[in-house]
Structures are given as C-alpha cells and as structure tokens.
Length: 278
Image (cartoon, rainbow, N blue to C red; front, top):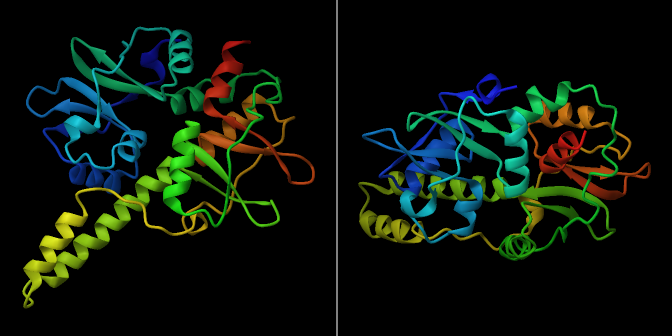
C-alpha cells in the first residue's frame, strides 16, 4: 500500500508570516491542533506546528518561531509500512507529503489506524503492547503544576484520580491548547465590548499585554479534564481498539481490569508497534 492511497489530501495549513493569534483562529475554526506550515507566496512547506509546540513555547507569539522547521517529509509513492516505522521510531504523529517541492497531503497516525490497522484481520490482543506505567495526577492539582509534571514525564496525557484513587478523568495537551484559546477569546470579547467607553483604551492595552504570554490559570485540573473517559480491556484486539480510537477520535485509551481499576494505557504509537510486528 502506498501513501497516496490513505493520505489526507488538501490539508489545512498555517501560513507564514503569521502569529499565534492567527493560529488560534485556525484552531477555533477547524477544531484541529496540528498544521503543516507553508509560505504565503510560494506554498512551499517550511514547517509543522502542533499542540506540543504551543504548550511548550508559551512566550512565543510568532508562528515562524513556534513551528518545528524543516520537518521530515515523505512522498505519495512511499510504502505505508515504511511510514509506520518512521512515525514509531521518531515519535511523529504525522508526516507532510511532498511532491516537486510542493505540499500535496499529510499522512497521520489517524489515517493509518482508521484505514489500515482497524481493518486488519489480526486477533492479537493489546496486552503485550499497552503501556503499563501511567502518569497519574490528583484531581486538585493546579493546572500549571499538572502541565509541568506532564512536561517532565514527557507525556501527552495524564490520568486524573480522586481522593479514593479512582480514575475520574483524563487530561491531554490538546485540553491545554483549547483552554489557551478560550482564555484568548474571552479577553478579545472583553476588549471589543470595552471599546467606546471612557478609559477603554487603558483596558485594551492591559488585555493586549496579558495575552502576549500564555499562562495557565491556577485552577484544579478537574475543571478542564475529560470526565467521560473511554476505556478498554487488555484482552481487546488490536483491530477493536483501532476502530474505537478512530471512531472516538482519540490517540490514547486507558486500560482497566474487571473492577474498573486502571492497569495501563494503549496509545496510537503502541498500535503502530503491534501492527508492524505482525
């Protein structure tokens, strides 16, 4: 199977020169958090920007400095098996597809899971491929501390536990980005509603200053976590979990035992490893 058969054609792109605010507008419009970045005049691929870039560079406002420059690429004629190995070994979730120096598509782990792994006939279970060490955070942990814990652990998600050590939610990098965007939108609305009032430009200046650097509010993580957590069991097959990930648009699913206790997590990268080892 070739990349051209499963890639996403005409991907939505961010454009340089551009700003973080413009990127947030794109996120709000599309509900996506990762984009290839192209030059406005030549359409040449110059980078890729993801939710991890946004969260890990909170003081950067220029897209050219936010993005990862000169990303690894592939071509429409490349074998999907090679792409699976590349994504897994490098920890990439997507690769731009380039032909004649022009961006022609994107191939993502989601494409591979939904169009390849979910329809595979393998009855192999996830037990030996799931990650059995998980990152857990108390529900009252302030957001900035939770994000820092995830950063230190190099984890894109954290399972949230209550006082009884029961799983009550999950939080991901995407949740932080959406919170940043919501805070920004609220401040812009405040700015617009304040125009024309006496002293309004002082308020506008203050809002602009405060939105230059992204900061997480000092609220408990339980206020932004996803509460209705989708789970699976260790005896579920690779294809069953792939179908669930694709249908629910997830990139990780906690694994629980018969009592509902968390025993691990299965990630999209784990599915790549399982499929490539068949």
